[in-house]
Image (tube, one colour):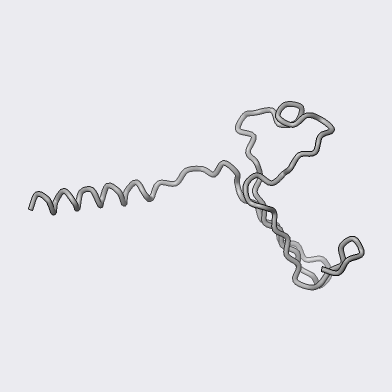
Length: 88
């Protein structure tokens, strides 16, 4: 009986801790815009500065900076579009 109670107690303890959620280091963002009859959606992750100085600190001025933090930025068009004279 003690073994069953111990197993149950461990299982409940594990379930309680598995529900914990922590703030994301890179908050997700989503934009949905309709232009004419075409809908454009963009999903991305924003890097959080967390008190750090980004421009002029982590990223020197006049240097290329990748704005995506974790996952790649995704852009979806509801209809075919032309970008840089190429059909997509």
